Each structure stands twice: as C-alpha cells, then as structure tokens.
Image (cartoon, rainbow, N blue to C red; front, top):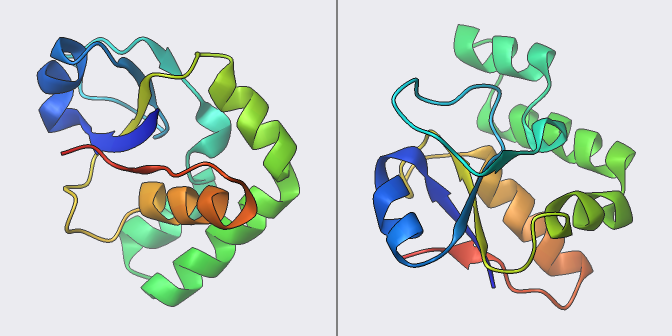
Amino acid sequence: MIYTGYYSKLKMYKDAGLKTISISRSEPKSITVDGKIIELAPSQELFEKSKAGCISNMEYTSMYLDQLDTLGIKNILLLIHNYGDDLVLLCWEAPNKFCHRHILADYINKRTKLEIREYD
C-alpha cells in the first residue's frame, strides 16, 4: 500500500514497517528517510512563489498539476515503485493543511487503480 504522511509522524510509519520516502525539497535535519523522490517535490519556482505568498492555492494546484503532467503518470509510478509497495510519501504539512502530497495522491488516484490515502 502507498500512503501519504508528514515528517512529525515518522516514527509511527517506521514502526508500521513502511518505507519513508521524502517528496519535499528538504527534510527536517533530525530525521533519516529511506529515500527521496525530488521530482515529486514542488519545483523551486513553485516553492518560492508559495512561500512568498504570491500565488493562491488554486494557482499552486494548477502549477503543480502542470509539473505532474510533464512527468507523466507512468514516470511518476516508476519513481514511486522503485521503493516497493509498502511506503509513505512524506512532506512537511499536517494532514489538515493544504499540501502538494494531497494533490499528488488525487492525481494518481484519478489516473490509476491505486488508492493512495493519508496514513492514520
């Protein structure tokens, strides 16, 4: 199963036997993840615009979806499946916050038979 999650719950994911895979531009210094898929992190431009508050969530979503479309669903799945099946895709935001990992999960769910959801 493939899940999404956030760095604060890393120990819980590891205790559950999941591989922890970063999909953000950076990770907290105090943790170690099992892998990283930088291609699924928001582009540097998107990250900077978001941090500066220059774009709305709708604009962010549109730009991130364009980034995913450029990669293509087959490449996205290959990048993820390089790490196996039991994994959690991680970034910084808590589950109730706007975040690219939710956009990514929705993108994959709509285009495949996979069901990626937040680990709880």
